[in-house]
Length: 216
Length: 216
DNA sequence: GTCTATACTTGGATAGAC
DNA sequence: GTCTATCCAAGTATAGAC
Image (cartoon, chains in turn cyan, red, purple, yellow):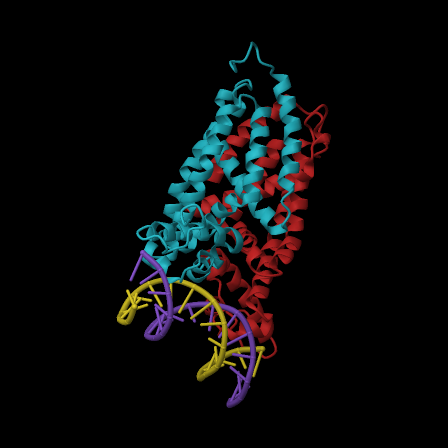
């Protein structure tokens, strides 16, 4: 019954290591979300994972390494949802609707918060900035895909500097996360999407599809 | 000669208190810029100010209070420059040019970094978030003025949700600061302004002044 | 692999001399 | 008002038993 029930560390021989490791990663994600980078100490993470803090150093060598593993976890976890979102949208309105669904749930779940915590504290830890930057690449690529989709049907849209725009999009997402975590209100972003959708519908209306879309 | 020369703390009777206090504020600003919120300890600030850390607690009661005073310092210091910038611009192009001048110098000087450090770490210290939020109000008001200026000559611009747009502008500024401090490059923002200016000129060209501007 | 115990460091804050 | 000296809490990391 240990198989289908709640797995206790150490009760299944041989599986303890991987289980503890995953528990620590999950605990690190939760800690980054709820108490931030500075609060995510080995003791705090160990407490959340239900094991002593020495396990952090046994499995990851240092707290920072564990936090990077946590960043990988949230990053890869959400990338699938984002990709299908961008791939499925063919107009600015559709893109915004999809973005609202995915982004607000992400903001609520705190995944963006994890990213923001790592980015804002990376400059203080030697060598961490480069590691975080590497893990940011897929986010920029994804944002650029979204920008390309958004301007696809706008006249002269192909001339838009999509790389720069993608940087601004990511920056805006991070900045909004900072502002929301400050005020505690998580509703502002949704209002923002509502307003943006109005304008998007206007733009899409100005440039209606010239023929049937290939959505079949 | 102590008057015109470098003032040493304690050498002029009665003036020591205010001088030390200001030294601590300046040191706190520099510390927030260079080593961030987590690195801005009482000892670090005292070292930069050339006095023992006990002075931090004598003059401000706690480290957090001193950091708030530092935030007030940079906030009020730059507000004048921003206000004259917004007031002096009457077109989107002019606004962007002025913004490029002021913002890039601010990003280089690290004033935005101070703001970002306080915002991103505020949620972790009980009671700090509310204080930081209060000090953020003039930034939003200023951004809203800028947005109003920018859309003044765009048709139906009066219908734009300027408050929401201002929030996005501030968020974008903070997010760009995070990304720039991560990569260490401080040139991306300038490139961004260059691109934006191209589009602004396009928009301004589409809506030329109907009559002579009241710039005389 | 996991635990307890501990060495070492740093930071916030206060006491008391001058 | 400023200084030195000190207390106490919390953090990283390691040693060694099981």
